[in-house]
Structures are given as C-alpha cells and as structure tokens.
Image 1 (tube, rainbow, N blue to C red):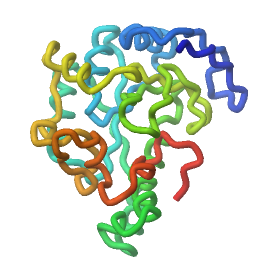
Image 2 (tube, rainbow, N blue to C red):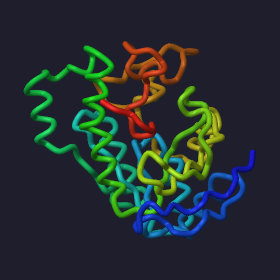
Image 3 (cartoon, rainbow, N blue to C red):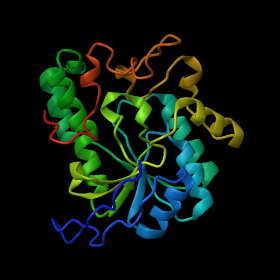
Length: 247
C-alpha cells in the first residue's frame, strides 16, 4: 500500500512546515536516506539497541547521524555492553536521556521497587516516569525521529507506515524504515553484515526491555510474550508509541 503524502502540521512553529513528499514504501535504506537528507540534523534514531540494523544503514548514508537512547535505570548489563560496542563500531556518540530522579525517588519511596507488577495502572506509571516523559524531552527540538518498529511485533503495531505524522508527539515526522521486515529478515541482515547484537538473544530472549519486565520465551511463542508476561497482550505497550495513553 502506498501512503498518501502527509500534510504539514500548523500546530507549532517548531514542526516541519512542508508536506511530506515521500509517496512510496521503498526499501529501508532508501527511506532512511530520504529522511536523513530531508531533516538532518534535526532527526535522530531512538534506539533500545535491538535495532542496530538501522544504525548500520545510517552509518553508510552519512557520518553525522544521531542516535539517542533512554536509560530507564533498569536495563540489563548486556544492553549497556552492546551500547558501548555500537558506539565504538560506528563512531557514534549515544545521546542518553534519563528519568527525572525526583519522580523515580517518589515512586519507589511510596510504592516500592516492584509496584509495576501489581496492576496495569502501576506498570504504566513506572513506564511513564522511566520512558514516556524522558522520550518527550529527547524529542524536543527534533523535526523527525526514527524507530525500529515493525508490523510483525504485535497487534498494536500492525498498521504502522514507513513515514507517518506522529500525533503522539505533537505531529513531528516518525520514520519506521523496517515496518515491513520480519524477524527472519532482521537476523539475515545482522549475520550478513556482522552487526553487533544483544547477547540476551542467544539466551532465549526475543524482545528486550527493562530487566525486571523481560524474560526468555520458549521456541514458537509470540516474540513479545516475554515482555510484561503477567499482563494481557492488548496492554503490552510502554506508552511511547500510543496516542491518548494515560497513567
């Protein structure tokens, strides 16, 4: 399906004021090239280091690409090790954003370290403090951002397009170059290009987030079944890609 051009947003003078003239799905690297040429330096990849495929592609397009990451304070050690390896391999400085320490201290002080397992509302509160609010700050000043979202990652992501207007974050442009890829294609590209990947994938993990909220899955299980495994599938989003998501 070929998406229609996305009209300009007039909600803020900080938003891109021209229509998005990318009319086709295109191959992932072509989409990235268009986005980087159009929006640099006010465009960056938001990475959780599962999408190093995109970093590899970006490094082939231009040397001044930008990458940012959210340090929730509860990531696995393997994730930090991969971040350092990617930074060295691709000569990119990761722009880290952290939760506001006052909010974390208030949450853990009043509800403890594992309140997120008590209810969906509590888990959303934790995700908001550690991910959603920090992402809003990381996106401040950008005209566009890049994600590793894919349609095969679950029902909440099945309709994403490669180029979208992101109404969740004020109407900036959201670029999902791997939208039509599946897991097999991802791993084929990783192996062919010898791209670093998180060692947790070798231990049965298929989706990696915060350490207390992620576990390995059995062969044949849904890839995201290891995320927030105590919740129903329709709740399994942290909130950074969901409109009208509240705590």
